[in-house]
Amino acid sequence: MPVKVPWLKGVFPALVTPFTKDEEFDEKAYRNLIRHVLAHVDGLVPCGTTGEFPYLSVEEQKRIVRVAVEEAGGGSAGLTGAKPVIAGTGAAGTRQAIELARNAKEAGANACLVVTPYFLHPSDKGVYQHFYEIARAVDIPIVMYNIPQTVDRYLPRTVIEDLSDIPNIVGLKDSSGNLTYTMEVLEMTQGRIDVFVGHDEVVLPALAGGCTGMILASAQVFPKVWQQVFKAVQEGDLTTARELQRSVQKLARIFCRHGGGVAVKAALNMMGVKVGGPRRPLKRTGGALIHETRAEIQMELEKLGKVQFPIPSFQFPTSPLEERFGDLELSPETIRQAGLRLGSGAAGEEPEWVQLDLIAGPKGGPLGEAYAFQLTYPLHRREALTTILEPNLTVRPPTLILPTLEQKNLRQANMIYGPTQSAVAKAIVDNLENDVIPVSAMDDEVMVVLATVDPKALDRHALHHNVYEAMDAAIRGVFEMAEGP
Image (cartoon, rainbow, N blue to C red; front, side, top):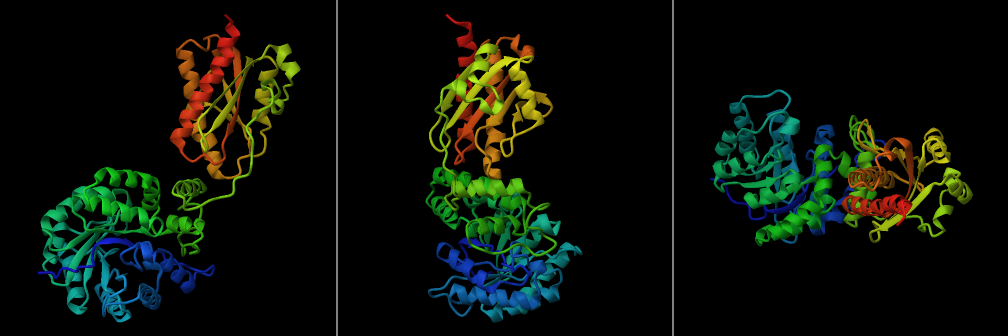
């Protein structure tokens, strides 16, 4: 029977491996990373998937594990005042995995994380033999590692059940995200081994189901959140645990969908914890991690208070409404002479405060010309956007959204061209259905919305609600005032 390891529980970060610009292991950056996270976690996991272990040489892995053990303050000789280190020692072949496990033990690691043999897929019996021979060859606790996303197969449940009888096979990290699999393993092993969740998106249900801890890439980005989740589940406070999980769910999803540490490194670099980029063939940007995804990471980190970017000072428009449409080359006199109708609305609180100024008029008049001009000659960093309900389905009356502030980064642009657009579209459709906007306007008129959105806006749902309220007020100002008493 396996011997229970008392420290095998809690929050363990799957550490990235920092590299220099020349793709060499950056020891100084690695030590800084560990010092950044160590006080908030229960142990360390170097040289795993997030650590890009397939791209590391044997000598590099030895050095990385040794540094982790030094920074953790201990090693396999004892844990007094130290944090345990579970060294990734995965390899496609058994001989290589045994060598890595021996190296990890010599470096002072407290346990080894051994992935299912990959690339050339052995039979279930071969998989069992792989783990059995490693456990027999090296006297160190072994944590099995199931990650079908990269191995292209599950670690068979029956094999896990058999291996759980080996004394120094003490745990399993399950990164599949498949809760059915996780629960079956927990049922089949009957507490003989500890099961760790390794998929950031399903931490709460996995812990509630019986997992004793987590090994996560995101645990080096927001370890305190995971500690709070772990504590809440231990205390039976699932309401708090659920709220905490939801607060980081988008980042968890991004990290899981962009494995290998690329997205995690991007987040850490944004936070000022410099870890460099990934090793080739992984890419820092493009392909694996597009610019829009980086913007999403930045937005979510801002919500968590992990990063703060300087926001340029700005003021919401305070001039008379008819003087606000200079960017459309529509003077107050032109507006009056052409009979253009105006409305304005504001809603929300900082930082999701918005103000929308709306102008409507015939397609064949000055506003129609200004509408076409904005599409042909867009303002730099303030490009006008046609309001759509869904791809290839524009709103009627045709409506442009023109930001009043320059979009300095992708985060700001995503807010303007995401929730703002959809909320404006919904407000127009609802007011058509409620007969506020006359049916005749659908074909005869155009509208332009000057959208002022707080550059600090982060909550997409709150922003969508506020834009809808402001647009509804602006529409009523245009069309109900036009009808008169």
